[in-house]
Amino acid sequence: MTAEVIIFFVFAAIAVVFALVVVLHRNPVVGALSLVASFFALAVMYVLLEAPFLAALQVIVYAGAIMVLFLFVIMLLNLQHVAEPPTRPIQQFLGYTSCAAFGIGLVYFIIKYAIVGRPAAQFPSTARDVGIRMFEAYVFPFEMVSILLLAAIVGSLLLSGRTGQGKAREVSR
Amino acid sequence: MIPTHWFLILSAILFTIGVMGVLTRKNGITIFMSIELMVNAVNLTFLAYARQFGQTHGLIFVFFIMAIAAAEAAVGLAIFISLYHHRDTIDVDEANLMHW
Image (cartoon, rainbow over all chains, first blue to last red; front, side):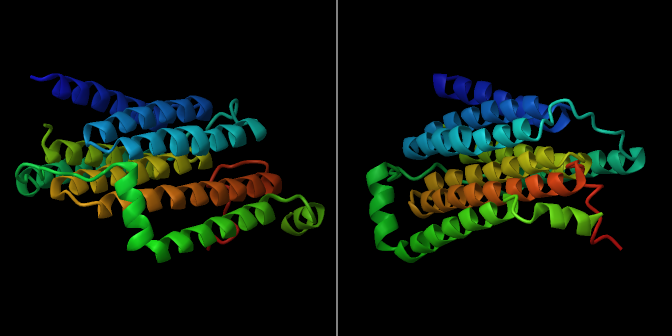
């Protein structure tokens, strides 16, 4: 029982518990903050996997940028007091049971088939290794991602813009 | 050194929780957060196998997935803002214009 194993189990438990809070809690603000905690625990997992660069990216991009966007939208739409109406009980029961069956099957087959040998001795995972590989072999996907992000900016501005909104509201009602 | 399949099991559990959220909740934002949870579970699998085989390709995939998740979050939240303007709710059962 080394320190690494203890850290793994503690942060795995944190990640799973806060993920359950995201799914089960009625208030979306609590859900968003729990998701931030879950992402921090996953960043610890990345450090345990010897990838500190991606752990930093996880904290900055996910916990820092994306989740702030989520919280911002929840606050903007004032959703923290919206009560969720009771859902159809049969469908919900089917959803939970089928998810449990899916998860148990997944874990069973991982234990049965996916146990592999010891990891490779060397894992080039510093920012330098990632950068060199990205601008040698993955230049074209990198440029595509930049175009995709531009398209996302334009698309989200277009979708959430209020121009012509009165007309659209009349059409939809 | 922690064996790779422990990370795979953790990733499977997180993915299952995400699927549960998508199937059982009706609040659009919560469904979206469950999708983010599933994306992160897949990232963990990529990284576990990247370390297993000592290759950088998995790391770069995780990098790209993070960029795409950022784009997805921006566009998806814009769609929910637009939906809220039209319907005054983000309950996904109310968004039934293309239903039937």
